[in-house]
Amino acid sequence: MAMNRKARTPREKYGEELRLRRTAAGLTQEALGDQVVCSPTLISHYEAGRRLPNPDDAQRVDRALQTDGFFARWLEDLETKYADHFAVMAELERQATLIQQFALSLVPGLLQTDGYARALFRAYRPNHRQEDLDRDVVIRTERAHILDGPLNPVLWTMLDEAVLRRQVGGPQVMAEQLRKIADMADAGRLRLHVLPFSAGAHSLQEGLASLMGFEDSASVAYVEGFLTGHLMDDPALVKACRTAYDLALSDAMSHQESLALVRAAAEEYEHGQQ
Image (cartoon, rainbow, N blue to C red):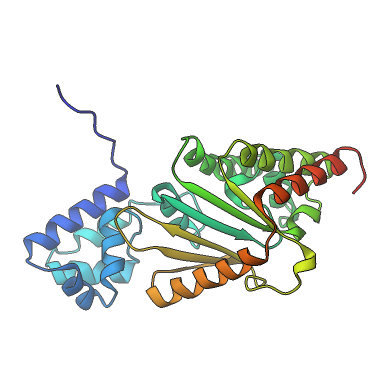
């Protein structure tokens, strides 16, 4: 009886074709990386469909493999619905087996409710159309479908206490948002830690950071700021990010203490005490 195979995404098909063409050319990932001027790890991410080359790298791939512009042309068809700086991160989230995220001031996108996400989009768009807000809220909240399964990815979420205290969208929106996080933590779908104000300065105080692990390739790290994001796959940089995450985690409250604090904050918003 035939086995059901998981449907491949366009990015995965792109990566598989790259692997086949590289193998046919007799090149290792390291050798191709030398010609493209990138690391073998990055080539492995291309071939797994986790990342896409930029246009210049795609042209260098075509020259190295003598594919007459094939990969550069195909790249033009792989458009994304996400902002340029976040498109790679969105793809990696789907394939990660482990996500460890830290948020300094806002609830991470994977955990946002519709109301919370809408309030954020309205905050930085002085002139907005309702249909644009509706579209962007759907795009953001659809990312959470990767959490529908009971096991993967394993999700760790560390929140600065500022995330709980900054009122986004009003008391009822905040109460709903914090209850969602608490319910997921209570159900075992995420490991929750809060970095309290009393911890003072900490190693991740400069902003949002995520670490992602995979079954068959090296971990990566991602940091994000206003309208910009940076993905790191250099082992030394990823190690530095992991060290910073571990240091901050050592200053955080336990899972149970964090869960209790988040539920208490939700109750305060619910009853107008914030």
